Length: 116
Image (tube, rainbow, N blue to C red; front, side, top):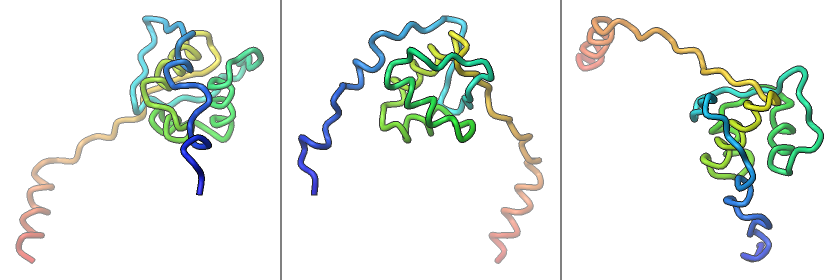
């Protein structure tokens, strides 16, 4: 069993995002997929940025997944990702949106399930 002192973070979450400059033109949401740019400069990053890049080496993840894996709040990771997208280290894209099924088909399925 670990004590509370061993589990506590060395750097508070708000300090991990304190030096970030976020460009205004970058929009990052929970479902935004991020991945490492081909020509990304990885030297000189702070520890949260380095941990994020190490996490993304296996492939793209959503911002929310990155926050869960890093153990940081979503708002901190969102700022971190926006800053790294702004300087060209990361690339971001919105996930594909599937077409919604026809409402009439859904109603038929629902009435069929109710009939069971």
